[in-house]
Length: 608
Image 1 (spheres, rainbow, N blue to C red):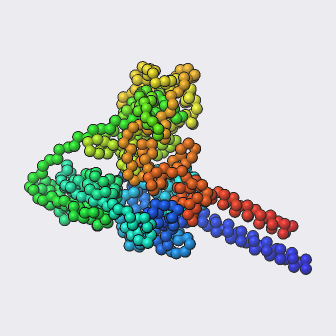
Image 2: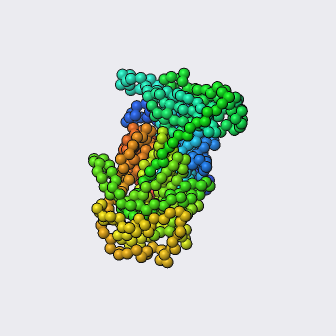
Image 3: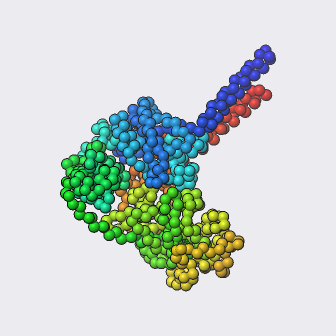
């Protein structure tokens, strides 16, 4: 009997060990392959804008767009599309396998026909939002990249950027079923519609120019326009949002593309521009979508529009305190390189500061920099007496310790606006605060006060104590350098500059762009207005130790705790939404580990 019991124990033990080995082999196979399995569901949020009523749809379709970076345009293009059905049951979900280093976007649809149309549309356009990428973390997670910095996590945080699943609203809002609509909607006014109109088609300096206006009551983005001339077509996609009552000039490719490379050919050719040529957008008026040019024999030169440069403000700061510094302007010269074109010393200035409760004048150091139409620039703030490099080889590699927005000067009417190079004019800047850098020339590295605390010994050379003080003459004269730059010799001891008394006066309050903002136009059609910026839906920010996100209602909302109803990962504090509930994955893993420990202890007692 005892022998039988010992044999039984050994058999059970061997089976259990074999199962553990199989599980280890299977896990190793997943890790070695580098592929991640990512779950996507489609929710009916567009039906009612009420999370408590929202549910994941059965029989829906998900498009996964595989994309790659087009560096010359700071955007992403679609190179392949996979379409899957969510199926039926209590958890209608699609599972995609994403290979290591692949970058993807997801869109949900209620019908297969609309999913095909969506794939066709996205194959002809460029994306500017941060894609999801398999960073090879071996935990079945996809993480959003830091926009075009595709080797960095969004906000430089794995916890912030990564998730195991996604629930996305469907895109084909024109097929909302009547039975899905709340009864209260029957009493509402008719749905607002878009009305795109081509108001004119003219010759510009080297291309055709169409003036397109939105005469409807609803904003529209990502619409197509087709130019036809000399038997050739040129279809383009206008990505930014065109709000009701506004117009935009859209240019075709050059005349050479149409074979109109001489004046004689150009003046003898007719041309046509048609917006929404595939009739993809439901409009209130479909009869004003095109305009034409008849052969004229003459070309009237177009008078160039005078566009005023933008006076852009940069607020240097050190440890969130307003500080003196030199602001350098770099212009893109292609291939990832940037050339220094201007340096201005920040001076103490009165600033109209707006808080949620009041508007008042305050004091902050700032440098006023110019931005012209068509310029692609970055502004870097340097500590006083720091060397200033005349060229940046690779912004993403060189400057990794602070956030540096890349700006593009775009003409709007007779003025230039500063738009994000990655998100277009959906995200505009009027100014921004910039952390001070110390450039160590011999190392070709950039340091902040967080990495080199000795920089704090600059004392009152760095900070001003109150708004009534006059900026010292050296602040204006000795530190202001006009290009070409004569770079000072780096100090022998890198972070101990001998600039005066170590005892500084009381610093100014910080110019904090998360809480205070200059008084500027802060309209935001598709997203959330936050601190003078337009954040895309789903963007998370940290405020006062807590995270908030941009919701579909265009409002900043606090992230939800475990067990709360959700639709998207970014709504949860844990960044994980599954089965319409916020989950604490770390807690779940801990519970599984505790279960495994109890099993192993039981086995020890059984064998003992």
